[in-house]
Image 1: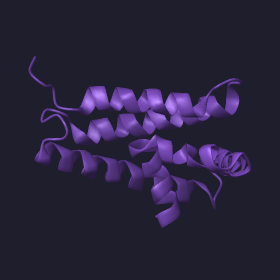
Image 2 (image 1 turned 90 degrees about the vertical axis):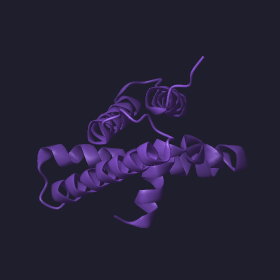
Image 3 (image 1 turned 90 degrees about the horizontal axis):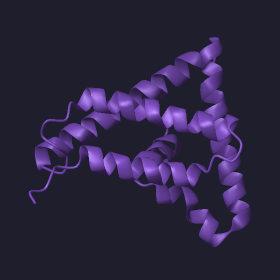
Image 4 (image 1 turned 180 degrees about the vertical axis):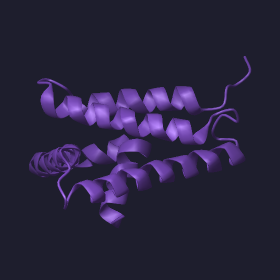
Amino acid sequence: MSSSINCLTFAIVAEPRRVVVCQQQRQCARREDEQFLKSIFILTFEAVRGAVGVTPRITRWLSEVEAAIAAALTTGRSDGSVRADLESVTAARQTVMTGIGIAYAWIVLPGTNLHAELMRWRTRIDADYSPQTSP
């Protein structure tokens, strides 16, 4: 997986604010970044058609992302930053599927605020995957 795609993926999953850094610095750069991100998502959805040059790469990329998330969750279980009872492989699959759903909604549903959805998703991941603290 290329380092730029890897960083983009983990920025979305692990630190959504990185996606909007340009908003605070330069509005023009933000629009270009959003257009690039939309293009990546659209290309991902084109893989459904079975395009010879696209489908295997997108499938491999999504599998690598899912495996990396599962590995990070397993590490988190070991160091106590993730719930001990969390099934890493299942949670990684759900994380990827939710991310794809958010991306799809952003592209096809007018008025979908990607940044707000990513922050809501991040909050839900924190609540669902973090160890429970005793009251």
